[in-house]
Image (cartoon, rainbow, N blue to C red; front, top):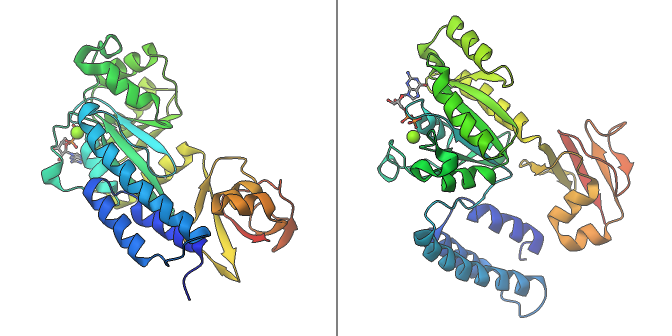
Length: 309
Ligand SMILES: Nc1nc2c(ncn2[C@@H]2O[C@H](COP(=O)(O)OP(=O)(O)O)[C@@H](O)[C@H]2O)c(=O)[nH]1
Ligand SMILES: [Mg+2]
């Protein structure tokens, strides 16, 4: 028996995450080979979608050369790492990256935005290192305008400053971002924290009173975990898991705050979103386990939901 088409669609999307170019096309071909060979219905639609993925991937591969700064969004949110050179942005990206970036492909003196996927609480988020923002960037100094353009489309910003470093370096960068009218939820990563003491950290907190300071060192796993948590809170997203025939999907779905049962049904499949009759919930948003709720019930972080057809 072939796997249900919705399961296949979810699996396919997961297998394509983080893949681009030739690698993505190879995966699409493998998926096409596994797809039941029906001429009509949902499997035929899936086939059509996968075929169009091949074309779209080819178009994107060509476009990369024309607009070298563009970063394709992936994952539930896009978070930019911004700060002066040498504070450890690339190292942090590397330490948190789900798919190991080969150092050969990835010079530590980065000139372009570098994306990486990280998994936080089971959800993939995209981190993007923005290198080389300097004083005058808002007036396009150092190619600043294109870099700021990448920042403009991000959901949130992690400012990076060496825990023991001089805050003015980051202040210069922040001024350019403010001058460009970019306002995003933000935190301050006090990087290379293993090299600094408490006094240095409180100097940073004083210099940036409007930002939460999160000390982090790539040499300290516990600090990386705390950093992941801080990044997750920064996105404002909620994690909801689906239950089906009594078993809970281990991989949560990330939804915007205030998302309803209809939003997650829609995420599973548009048809389901249009036709389902209600749901049962377990977790923070329910008054008791397995509570029957309507289409407009608002979900909360940590909920488990069973969609009733
Ligand atoms: N001690 C220590 N050194 C770090 C840490 N993170 C990065 N570094 C070092 O700092 C230097 C600059 O790091 P890099 O990631 O290239 O900084 P970027 O220019 O901001 O991307 C490198 O020599 C790294 O090995 C850290 O957490 N602790
Ligand atoms: Mg770098």
